[in-house]
Image (tube, rainbow over all chains, first blue to last red; front, side, top):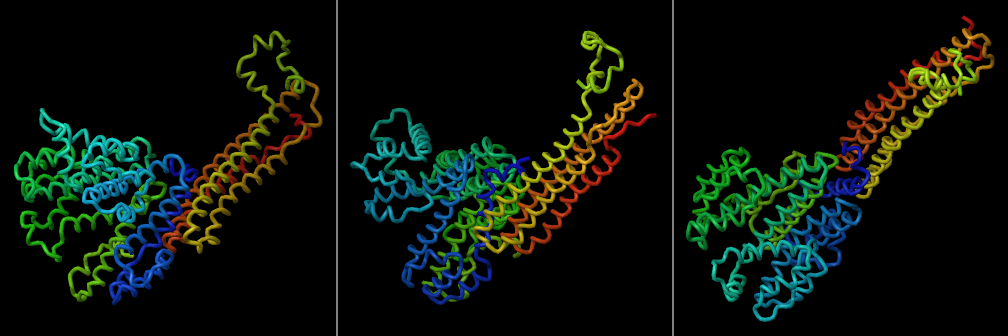
Length: 387
Length: 201
């Protein structure tokens, strides 16, 4: 029944996404981009595609970081338009999607402030998709009092609830007779990647429960599958990265870190949880995921993390394999009507496209030979459909 | 009360009507004109509900996809026309049905004649009512079907231009459903004209 009434509130927004889907770059266009000899040529090529308006004001020799900002700003503007045309549940849903980018922005700003980078530079580098009005208030950092920063400033932000949960969890993990100094040291030494992964894990779980409770069955069908796959992707990544990691030297430490960073949703949780928490080699990890045959096939070709030093540009890392599979799934979600999955898929695939363009811009600016294996490292959205 | 037009077959007085009449009797004495006009309203109104539902579902998707893909504008108006056709079916049936309703000029005086006349009038009334239901409901569902398919047509045309004609075929099959309703409806109400003069035997 939801197909009959979907058009009432959300039909317009979905139809705009369908029109935007035609603006993705095709394989032929990627081929032409690869043949560009210099950045100005790439820029003039991009001006003939859907990106024309956002690059007109810059000079031809555009630096890669500015190029990335412009492309992301275009995506952010489109997304803002769609969010403005939406009502009710869809607006909440789209806002939730943007929280992921807000997490990235806030963690980057905190790290930048720790390293005493100027606030203006930090503000100009934030991801425009994750902009929110309170982001300018994060500059107050008296001395080294990070915990008060977390408590006072971030509590007003839309992602404040994730930070609160994160703080509570980290404080819990300290031993019994903890002092204020211990807490301060904890935050000063905590790695930004760790904070980022924890927060994103909390965001994913929150998003999953939002989808389960508030969306219609057609949307749930598509979205819950995508989110479960993303959670499994994160789980496998966490375990893979923690095998042979230099910073985690004891088994107990490995297991606690894994338990903190692996999401509690997805196909692998809770059935395979005991097994994958203990996995200390790649083969053990393959054993742990062998129940789900998608992941078994994916991990078949993954390189061994214990031999991490031997990786070079040519190896297909686990990240590459998983991005490939992810893109295929997102492209497939465009095949259904009346579901919110298309908004999520559009965001992810457009991000992948921007990554591709920036990668190619880097390759071009370094003037690498055309048979360098790095040229093949891009993953083209919708290429799996044979279009 | 229709009793006054049609006479008093059982010879009841008011008190007896209140105590001795069963529900079946009361149901039977609902005026045939009530049934027939209700049928007309059903045929018209539910067809139009279906058609308008279809148009709003299609129109929304059409508007949204035209923002980024203006080439689909003119072709996809066909979906809206198919939905409109469903409403036209409803109007045609309603006009045909109204043509069959008319006052009875000459009601006979003896009780037998009245009963015969009443039975014939009831037949016309029921026939028109259920014609209205069959035409109306089938057009309602047909309109929704064509509308949802039409919105899918607009969206997929914006994504991949080759799919337009193929999805249009699905829509054509969908609009055939409304036609089935109209055909059956016309046969159903074909003999149901209210008589000008009552049949005598």
